Image (cartoon, rainbow, N blue to C red; front, side):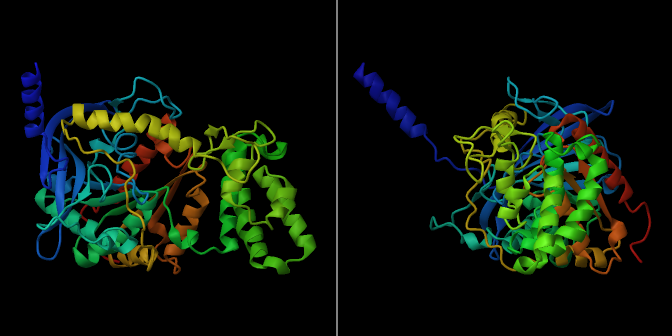
Length: 493
């Protein structure tokens, strides 16, 4: 008995392998899905592709999933969409299995988890009009740094920062497009949240250093650190229309507003935020008492907060306080940061910020089992390496953030290039009005404004989790892609 046990243990030890992801590999599977009433046959390639240093040595490997429609007669006319999520440090999982891909989560129509976990066909996927690759930056998904011959990992500074991230991802995209023979295709990059910063920067980097010209840049709930890193109170005025939207959804606005439709009241809140609140905040402590009182009263009207609490914050109300305060005297619950339709329960009703993000815990509830199951059982990519929903990418270097200007230059130099922005009204992290403000600030001349499109949805950061908005947002993507194709027109002014 002991001899048998010894040999069994020996066999286990001999066969044990180091838990590493292959540096350069992929697996192909074939599938079909019904999209908008049409059967679409497609090939899925999922695997890893290296990032190289100047010596041509692999320093990292990025995990990706590439969906390619079968039986396409002319690949040169077939658009390619390159998709990123954000974080920084988030896997490209959210849009992959909940928005644009051929499979979506098994969730209810409002986006809440249900069991059994898993995925189902996505009848709204944009795979009918474009091929899609979902790219996981270093340390997200199965993407990892690669040791050199001496067992040493590369310097983190080469990957974890605004400009480093843009630089190596542009190089990776060049390799991918070359390997997959997609240089002739119209190309689009889409980024959600921090991915918005990423793709704004990639537009110029791809153009300047990879000589790759895009047809479109798509920003989904974009994070703009030109706003977040200023610490200037005037920019908090941009949060007010979001406060209006969230308060309307939670039914705590005054009756004259609450009885109207959301889209009828948001223009009022936007006008007040830009033309009244922002100039008042600019005056700081030198604003007159009467003006301060009047503005606080109007803020209370548009936000569902009390005039007293607004004055206690000197009109500069933090979003974290809003999430805690809005329902404090109604249900005692908190509202979600990324999607304020979601409710949370804190240890105490007292305090200035929620204990946790109610919406994110709900999303991880359904996304994590689904992506792990889907990659193994549907796409046949099997590994013992952990799939990182969020990876170790910090500290993140946010210095020299010039992505807004990069996007402007890319658009100015490329007459084909158009931009679509998609935002949810109930997103309190990257607010819809903040996204509009970013759009306004990209090009101060106003000469490029006709090439920008903004679309809003009655949901949050991941607007596509709500089925009605999943349909609408994908249709908006289709329309944008079709409208930004050259159709034989020369790229000139």
